[in-house]
Image 1 (cartoon, rainbow, N blue to C red):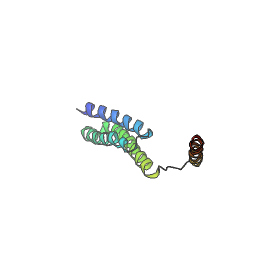
Image 2 (tube, rainbow, N blue to C red; image 1 turned 30 degrees about the vertical axis):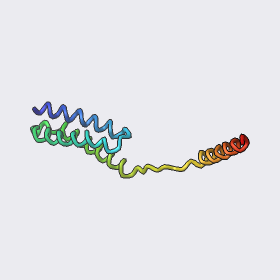
Image 3 (cartoon, helix red, strand yellow; image 1 turned 135 degrees about the horizontal axis):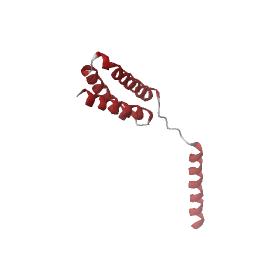
Image 4 (cartoon, one colour; image 1 turned 180 degrees about the vertical axis):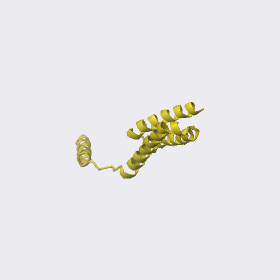
Amino acid sequence: MRKLVLGITIFFTTLSVVFAFLPLGTLALIPVGIALVFGFLALKKSDTSQVKWVKVLLIITTLSLVFVLGKEVFTQDEVEVDQQFETQKAESKNEAQKELEDLE
């Protein structure tokens, strides 16, 4: 049972590190949460001599959690107005109106 829980923890810890660097937003919290739950289960099932790898996995998962939360809090999505596009749009509208006036 311990090996199964440890294997699931390793898989979801790896997945949480990968998701932390991809631009997935809060979707990366799902593998982090699963890795933390199974990490604590593995910690509970392990003997004192087997705890070292589980603690390393929990530290990596916690760092992924901090990274995802920090990226979500400190990254601001801003939409800037493209002035060049707006001027081209206005110019093309004026040209279209002139063409219509010429046709009449």
